[in-house]
Length: 320
Ligand SMILES: C[S@@+](CC[C@H](N)C(=O)[O-])C[C@H]1O[C@@H](n2cnc3c(N)ncnc32)[C@H](O)[C@@H]1O
Image (cartoon, rainbow, N blue to C red; front, top):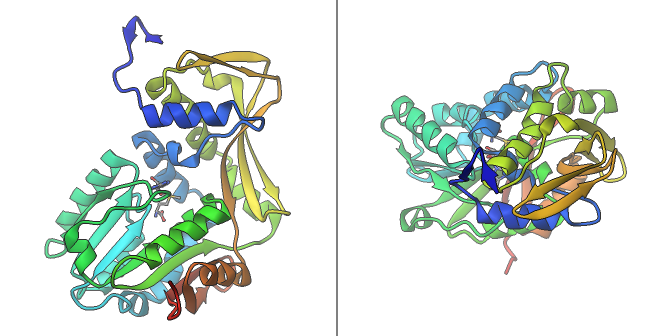
């Protein structure tokens, strides 16, 4: 497809293949991992500061209140590896309390944003070894030899676990369980609560979340030879009680055809693309997920409103 008369420069073949598979399925879908180009990462940071978005400030409070105990899960000279690290803002609470930590490895799919964040952290923590890893955690993450060798703790905050299908969440936890010398998994998860609070967190009054989700269409235009008109899609967030998750959709406002990498995709008026889900975990659900992937729940910190939990998982002894 031509873009202003020139062929697009940075066609992303993995995105093209994934988007074509998702958009030609009966229920059209896009994977949330594609939300995070540089603009998407910056928009997510804006979301974390919204009044409706309680998860970030609630989890940050739990991390602050228990920083010493959480930092102490990392052995002296060991490594903290963060999955889906984004701007690593909350992580600083653990790094501040963990002067004994030798290495911090932020792992993220959003390459440029990750490297910018790593550079900022090098200035903040000049004696800490900062090792950014560009990786998609829905596939096995290749660790450097140095990271493989040291005792390590995985950190997965932000309730990003909720964006994964339960089978994928289980696969990720199992894969991390198999990392050499893994000592603990610190996992932040959002909890089930009143529907209006949940929906408002994903459909804010300023429309930042709508812009974040809609940005995926702009990315498809830029990197997947597509010609979406984003103004012809509405954003919709709904609570799905049966699956304990918020569903985020882009809904076509009219009958239309869109081209993506020379394939024509038709949308009916009102037809929705499922772009992201945010699953909520009560403590029992989380414990079941942990046990099914080789982890014991060593302890779980929950805020006073029971909005959010941070669990410390330790490797189950009998696991092969
Ligand atoms: C919900 S944000 C959380 C950011 C940060 N950890 C926090 O707690 O505020 C999800 C992060 O995971 C990253 N991410 C999403 N899918 C990913 C994937 N499949 N592999 C690696 N990183 C991914 C995004 O780029 C983003 O930085």
